Amino acid sequence: MAFFITHYNSFMLRSLVKALGIGLVSAAIMFFFSLFCALIILLIIGQFTPHRLDLTVSYRIIGVTAGLTAFVLGFGGSIFYDVRRFNRTAAK
Image (tube, rainbow, N blue to C red):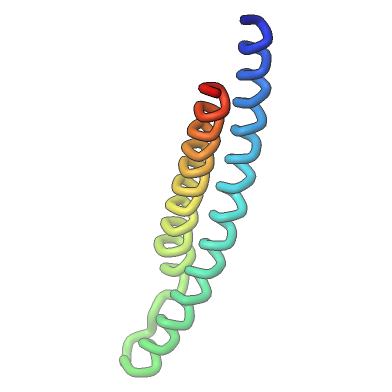
């Protein structure tokens, strides 16, 4: 029983660190990709309208929202996958 508890704790710590890394990397990639796309779209829209568009919208609203969404999905998906994998190996 003590081996299972120790093995489970080290597994969960490893899973959390890995999930945090996956979440941060996916958030950074999604932030910069969505920021690039939003800037291009806003620049194209700005060419066809007489209004001066505020490009900080792409940072504050679009980039941050996409980054946080990617972090939550990457972190949650990685934890879900690791817990399922642990339960499969523990059942054997």
